Length: 344
Ligand SMILES: C[S@@+](CC[C@H](N)C(=O)[O-])C[C@H]1O[C@@H](n2cnc3c(N)ncnc32)[C@H](O)[C@@H]1O
Image (cartoon, rainbow, N blue to C red; front, top):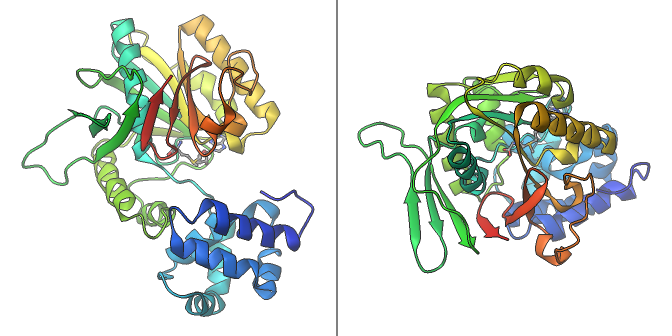
């Protein structure tokens, strides 16, 4: 993100960075559009009329896709933007980047299963920053863990029922404690500033638009996960995680092992917000024996002692990845979309 307070050149640089660093490996189309936008002062001036946090490339591109922009050469995309600018602005200003990546369940599953097994109890889950809550169903999806020499399959086989649950594929390395079966989940809830509703077609269309155009496999598994969630929608509480967490945790069944988890959320909080959250997690650990799974990018890691630096880890291993921590202790490096799990 460019520094706030540098309008104009800052936004162009943001799109150039997105087009050269973030997008190329996942979406040649977004890379191409972003680089052209960076060199298009007229469009940058219009984007700069929006509040700073609304200028981010993924939000603007997803809004255009939500409205029907197709993968195309830039001049065609530019024409689309010109014809739909008021609607693009309306979507940008009313929506946020709330990608709900169900693939992340694959990187959380071994830890969840280990907690259930160590506690000898089923799980009660609270996801903070849950979006539509799709990661609250780790017990309902299929998994394929591939360590390069063998594939371990887990998960429900539901012959005759349509649609089938998604199968989440994950490359593994190191001594991943793969479970023999899926953990039992008896209670699942989430908190989000703006929970998305799997029954609402507009919310579902927005979730699909947030997936980068060429990543059809992610859209397909999103659709399958939404079908699973629709069968038994989770309770999602609207509000700030710091305001809602303690009262929600108080509702968890006492005979289940409580786990609070989050992925790709801490970047949205201020440093103060993260410190407050860590203090709440420490209180929940003490009073309730609650477990804490944090799956976040390198810049917002919060460890048990509050530090964000993992001294024993080569920072280059983390670049572009997430770090999974259990109760503040690093346990694995994970692919940001759940595509890999490198156990420490
Ligand atoms: C990038 S999405 C990730 C969603 C989900 N954790 C996943 O991995 O698929 C981040 C989510 O965090 C939510 N969020 C951000 N700040 C929050 C806060 N202070 N309290 C509750 N939710 C928040 C956003 O609304 C958004 O839905």
